[in-house]
Image (cartoon, rainbow, N blue to C red; front, side):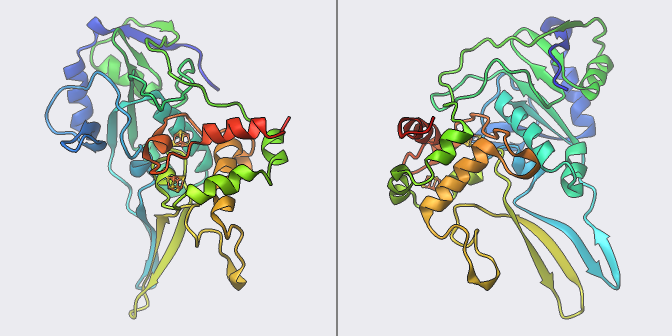
Length: 321
Ligand code: SF4
Ligand code: SF4
């Protein structure tokens, strides 16, 4: 259940360098880093201090929790082998939207052993961010996942692991309090209802927007809650087999193809609508759950400026009620 308050400590009581040292001693450390090309990426963190503000990395945390290509199992010499247990790691400087996205992935992969094994090894340190023009997050929401949260005044323990870390660094007297957000979010997601969405299945906007869409898949690749994948089995002449899970993308032409050459989503309009449905209304056990955390990555990366919120606004005006 979502906590409304967390144990928190005034920043001046927390020795951040010591905290970072304790984390680093036990885990590989990752942090957002802006390169010479101006793009921010999650990268292994060398020496240096804890960042003090979160930056939305070009590729989100899912690249560590659900890598683009991972071995699931192999069969060699008559035996099945599961993939190796991943090493413990920590990510510092995670924005709120990415913490919420991890919570969503936790639900979607609740029964997935490789994901859960990696997730159990992850320590996540959230931080206050500076929202960009593309951001549409629920800035007033409490973090749903994560272990620590640092802003300009306090440090919060979001999990027992976070609390233990702070105690190990000498923080003893905490105060239960809600997280308060020092910055206002620039925009709001359009609150499209399922009824509105499904009453405009044939709306012209899908074909209009699809004429511009390049099916490049960039929006889905950078989305922190997009997780479509494919399984690839590689069989060798010695009888061994290895199964890999690799990222797939609902914008790719092959994604909806099944046996018998049937294609669930043969056109770009079908694929664009499918992505919108997945983002706003989920599938399977998560049906009805919005999975857009408002990070703005898709808006930022789309080469032809397709924006799901603008589509939602137009659908709203096209007769759904
Ligand atoms: S749909 Fe766009 S704004 Fe929403 S979570 Fe995905 S990338 Fe972020
Ligand atoms: S990034 Fe834009 S052009 Fe590329 S698939 Fe997504 S909506 Fe289409």
